[in-house]
Length: 249
Image (cartoon, rainbow, N blue to C red; front, side):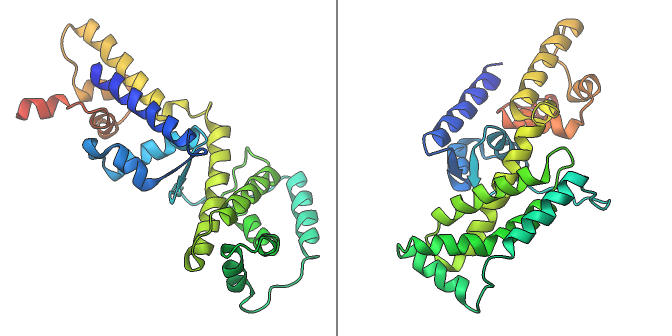
């Protein structure tokens, strides 16, 4: 119980740190925060997803999603929006050879005018990213606009011309992913970090009272409808050992 409470306290502390940095934090900062816990990649991903749900940008983290097996079908409203939006983008001047790289250097050097032109050059790429990350329950136009917010944020973050493109694209993807996380938060509450910890805690207490003894992972798995591996992963993340590990010691 104490370990779970301590973990939740630490997780909330991490969110507070990120909020104090403009709702942003780096992967290295997260790892450093949990240095003593020595989290696995899977556990870190759970933490990253929780931060996304709290509208915190984790710099460098892009959530991996399964590719859609079926062809995406847009609504009539989305088709009309996409057609009009892309038509408007045709008004911008075509990109010249080497122009983007030159603009990166100028913007990093303090030339604010380069930001406007880079924005124009990336708008179509934002559309393609939004289409790749399309969520049927979110209007495509909202995803594009959120990607555009990421584009502006990415341009403000540039410090090196060699990594400028990746920085911008990652920021665009993160902002769109944050929109998806926010939209699906209620429907996927059981997949969120805090809810998982709370649900596991309540299940352990309930089963312990009913059985009059310490419960095992396989019993929890049946009771909660989760895999033993997932439950074990959460227990490790909270700094607790499974029943099997304790028996081996």
